Amino acid sequence: MSIYTPPADWFKAPTGGERLWVGLAVLWCIVMTIAMPYWYLYGKQNSTGEGYRVEPGAFAERVGRFVETNQVGEEAGIPIVEPAPGGDAYLMARMWAFYPIIQLRQGQTYRLHISSMDLQHGFSLQPLNMNFQILPGYDHVLTLTPTSSGQFSIVCNEYCGIGHHMMTGRILVVE
Ligand SMILES: [Cu+2]
Image 1 (cartoon, rainbow, N blue to C red):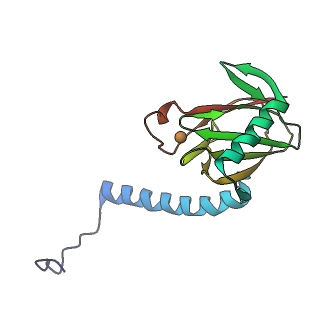
Image 2: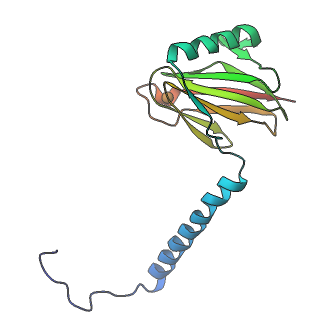
C-alpha cells in the first residue's frame, strides 16, 4: 500500500516513440519465449543430462590416463590430446585453466567428460556459444560431433576468482 492514493486517471497509455519501444520489447519477449523451446528441440546443442558423481582426485586420474595414452602434441607446455573416434575425452577445469587441449576429427562423435577440481566454472565454447556448467564432484558428459574444422576456444563464463578473465582453453578440430 502506498502512502497516498494516486488519482484515478493516473495511467496514460504510451504514445509515439514510447509506444514503439514498448511494442518492440514485448515482441522480442515473444520471440525469445518461442526461441527457447525451439532451440531445445531443434538446436542440437543440449546436454543429454548424462552425469556421474566423481571425486575431483579420481577425475584428475582419468584425465592423467587420457593424456598419457592419447597425447599427440604439445603447445606452450600443455599437451594436445586426441581421443579415438567414438571414444571418451576428458577436460579438467581448475583455477584458472582448462587442461588439456583436445583435438577432434570433424564428423566423428565423442563423449566429452567435463569436471572441476575446485569450484564452479563455466564451459563456453566459442564462437558457437554453447554453454555448460562445470561442477566439482560431478562428471558431466557431453556428446559432441564437430561439424566444422578449426580452432575453438573454451572460455570460463562463471566468475571463479582473480584469474577468471585468463581462464581459457582450446578444442582443435581437424578434417
Ligand atoms: Cu573458471
